Length: 251
Length: 251
Image (cartoon, rainbow over all chains, first blue to last red; front, side, top):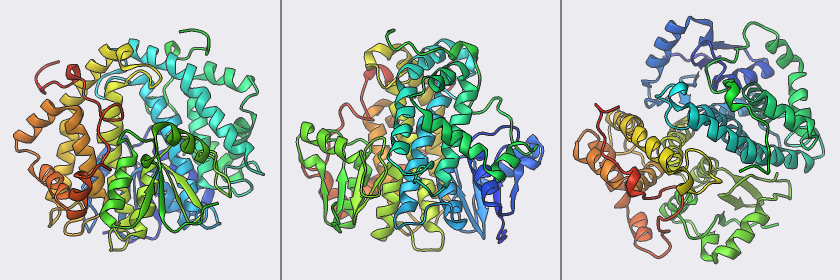
């Protein structure tokens, strides 16, 4: 059993995926951590499979990312973020902020990560994209028309309600990091649709947050490094057929 | 601003939905709570809309369920469950258990609530089921073939790894309640497929947990009461076309 006081991120290599939110948080905090992305894809898969078995008081888990820290082994992105966020002081400082920040992070992950993933896999994750291409195009069209503006308008509203550039106002938290990564990935998946949203000016505070997180010294230095995982076959995928402009009047 | 020390659940009336997990936890704990389900659907919608605006230090939120408690207002089912679970002593008692329980609850909600919902709405939540009926049937068939056995096998594995009837072994936690409600709803949505799974005997510990939670005095008394919300148009819906037997050999 590892009792290391270093954070150990256990996730697949070769894709940002859900692990990227955790990586970004650890990079921002400046705390030392280990990351299985340093291994080959095959070694990584073995470590992940073994870690999912749990043990030493921890239950088996369903899927990575996993975090090991001082003997505790946990799964689920939002759970890991909340755990690390509190330990490194990036979960807000007022009474109850940890719960507000978790709510915001979960909302970003639901709306701009899970929903975007399901745009390319609406029928089954077990099937190839090519086997659900038509459904994927239909879902993407609907998503860009209805959901994307609803999500962006929500984040604009949160930011407009605060007296500062971040989701809690002047205090930076890991919810800002999560929203950044969600916006970043959604721009990779839907460059035309997100470009249109950005140019509309309706979501200026949202895109300012994206720019603001990207410019933070630790984040900027990570993004410029080789450690930053490239988008490819994970949650955020670019399929030109899916990236349409939103025409709110169309049916 | 309400500073009540009573838990206040804010959710739509007329459907169990995501709020039901929270209701079941509050019923199990025996703590007094208020529930907007006591109001008419229309009044409820107004209270929900107003509460989503946040205020008094709380950000706007995207969707219910919401919980208000001592001035704190939060959203997101798993977040609310974790908050209440810790307050009422149903989140485990060993070091780190709160994080293990949150991981388990999130996994149940992902796999046996969100995924089941998406079986009847694979294309868009904004469209009627009738407008995505074919895709819904295709997704359900795939889900019953691949995902359902994977989820049930996972929970069987967790329970087999413990020395007691609950997900943490002998200690009952709110993760057991969440899994119960997920199994209950999935049985409503897919009676044939779940009946087949149950009769196979492969997941006996999982169905024993479902029976075990149902028989707990506070839960049993709630389930028999008028407060228990009936399944209908929410997350768990019964569409006969979607409820097929699993034929693992078919394509």
